[in-house]
Image (cartoon, rainbow, N blue to C red):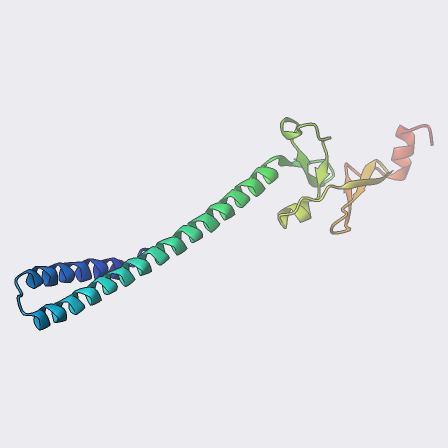
Length: 164
């Protein structure tokens, strides 16, 4: 907040300088005039100092506002990045964040690690292999293997997929 005392000081000093200047008009004595002139100049210097202090504070506040605007802009961009994903249930109690089709903008639809996403990082899961009806992925950031889909026992899986 602007330091009101600096502005008040400048106004008070200028009022005093005005009073001194009006008193100087009526003086005929050179010594008294010189004394009032010095007093007048001191009040002008005091007013300038207060004005410069207020100006410095204003510049500092403007710098802080600019820094906060940059932080808000960065946070807004981060939020937009995360809003592009939605949490999806892939069956078998397996969840991941998936890029919304409406937000793809030419990117392939992909999955992001739910653990990393909660840590405010987007880590794209990499397919590893398929086993017993589940797709296995690995997170390149946290290195956790993640499976998606319902687990099918090997015997049941083989009976459904005769090519084994």
